Amino acid sequence: ARVRIKTNDPVYAVKKERTIFPIGEFETTLSTPEIKYALEHGHIKQVYNCVKYEQANIFSSYVKMFYGLRRDFASAGVAVYEQLCKYLLNSLYGKWGQKAEHWVKIGVCPNEPDREELLFTYGSNEVMRLRFMLGEVFKLKSYGECYNSFPAISSHVTAFARMYLWSLMQLAGHGNYFYCDTDSLIVNDKGMDNLTEVIDDMKLGYLKHEETTHKLIIHGLKDYERDSKTVIKGIRKNY
Image (cartoon, rainbow, N blue to C red; front, side, top):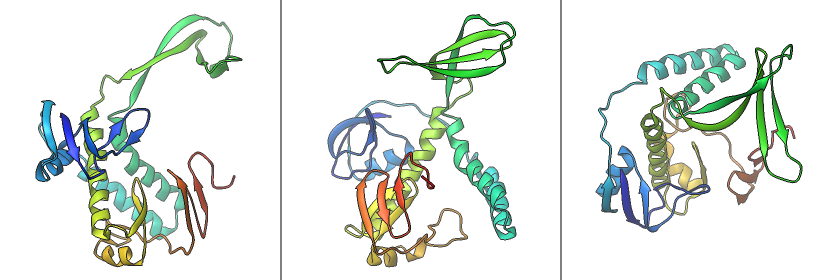
């Protein structure tokens, strides 16, 4: 639903150049879990339009199967397959919102091997992507919605995850968490004590205690230091 919100809780996502979670009064698009929270707290001031879908539990068998396999591979010490199961679990929702590439034929190239190339234009930010395939040359023109996409599924999965993370922040208690990311929290001792009931390495949907650190320096989003390592988005661990 497209709505106007007035809130002091930084819980509703707004995407401009990047995703932010503002407070105050603003317009945004919300899905079911966010709408429920907004209605419960009186944050919705106006509804402009909405789309209604029938709901169903569509992923439980998939998740149960791959989570079971992941635990089995972890117990057997097969790290590669455990990681593969993790990727399959984490990536499925995004397929429903994946964009399609629109390629146009721009020429022929007899006897050229199949490949893709990136062409960088000197003096500008333009990057051209070319695909050589079966003796023809194609240029990537644009991105658009896939024929079989269903963005409402992806948006609901991410919204449920954000609202669950928000509920964990409230459980930890204001002032007891220092940083949060997609699926994690960095908290103090009191926050850790408050979260005890939702910490279990073996239960799906529960938190896992990764480590205790005595040093934390937060430089910005996805850019922080702790005892064991430094995290900077886009830079590999072995850099």
